[in-house]
Image (cartoon, rainbow, N blue to C red; front, side, top):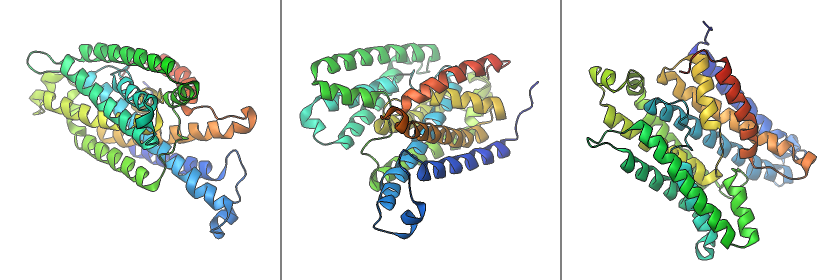
Length: 335
């Protein structure tokens, strides 16, 4: 039997790595940065790059990574399915369609990135509400198998609608839509006020879920086992989906579709420290944030090589896919 890490140790290591990756993303990039000038000269271009570009971008990446990882963890817990990625259950498809509609309508798109984010946020919440409605049984209980299947169908329908929109808009608009759908942190939503809203939504949903950590632990015993322990499985599942969907919709609204973060990070964390949600929730938040900050720094660092910046969603898929297969191969049993 493999030896697991102590949860406090893993959480501390993840937090330290997050700090290291944040600092790395601030001081090292495609262009050289004079840290001394950025610190001492308020009017220097180095200070402008640091405060207006690198720090907001890395903080946005940390929040998106934490949101996707935590939502993946709780969705996998309540659905008792290790493949319950945040994007499988329909939230991503709805958010993508909402953002694509905004981009395709010139009158609405004139509002800028903020309107795209609002459209994606509304689309994601609408998709999860529709999935929840279609997947409930006669007694109001959620049927996990139906929930996953309906999510797959919703994503397929939304993907077809997005493809249709891409064929009827101008080539430049289609390219902009494609870049956003592939997942990127190089957006215009990094103003302090916007970052504050994103942080507030992510923090609210996380605290809501952390309050439900004991109930999530009880749900691992099944609905009947949770009921014996005094946990209402229907109410708990509803709250988890509301909070998790808020996390996913917030993340997609500001970054597009960044895949595999919500799938591989929860698997890795559970493999290392176990399944106690009192520890896996903060550990997933730190590990997911560190993973996405590092991935975004990677695509920026490769700019001098390819003379272009790839969407970070491409790198997370290229790294996350093989890493997930390796984790499955090494895992004796799926948690």
